[in-house]
Image (cartoon, rainbow, N blue to C red; front, side, top):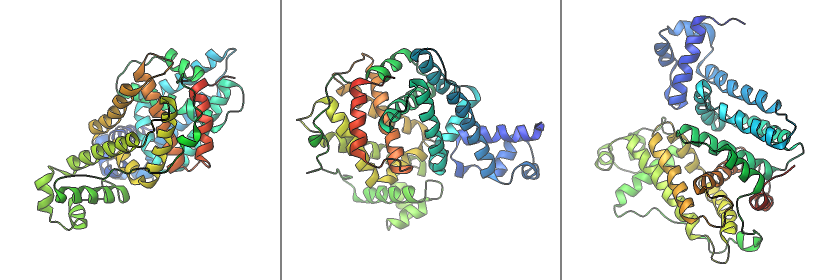
Length: 374
């Protein structure tokens, strides 16, 4: 079907805007202005903003449907190359913008993440030419999706051979077997927001509550201060803007999460076992504080540099403490482990595909020690 120039202009305008901004902050009028066309022209082709947004989301989904379904090759190495190359290509050119758009859609429309998760599962089964369990799929897709996208979006060199090595051989030399201690929930400590100034603390609590429930763009400074029983003027004594306030909240969430994980690891566990305990604690913490996940993801489109720093801080913590690993590149290992945790959180908290966390982590432990083979 031939697309008119106006249709293409509107689509490209929407692609540019949605890839740079949060969905809620983009209007039909802005899409039209950016395309140099009238609102009437927009409604000639599209019913509303949501329709054009989902059209762009479906582009990347269709790309993965085609890429993962066509994986073939006479050797495992060839098939794994094609799988990883499909993900790499999705982060280049115009597709790179679509990836940014999809990252929002996976939360706004969970059915898309369900579908893409199924596509990844099929791709992984095509690579290994056998049925794979949930932990194996999470191990491969979590590492691959997170590492490749994070590296490409930050302009970092991506070493495919090293990532393949981790997929096929595992990450840790240390054996993972002390599951009673890994899953022990006795005396878990929850860190609190500690600030000298109680007014500032109350404002931060108010922001977390409202940003987590309503979203950044649907919450204004008046809402934040009213919820905390302060005047708008009080807010500006502590924060320059709503954006700088969000940045502070993102830093705080990262600090609290890292602190929670650190103080609840156990001395009787080796580094690999504490990795699995960290995943267990992470899922518990974010399930109880699901608003944290919502805030950090929205912040990716509002205060990008601060969100990058959020992930960078986790990466630095990993690199400093990694030991007993099978690859010298600690940064790649760190991002691989972060990716597994990131997508495990999505599966457990948002699309609710994890039925038994302990069983999943036991299966994942085997992958962390041994990798995956046909």
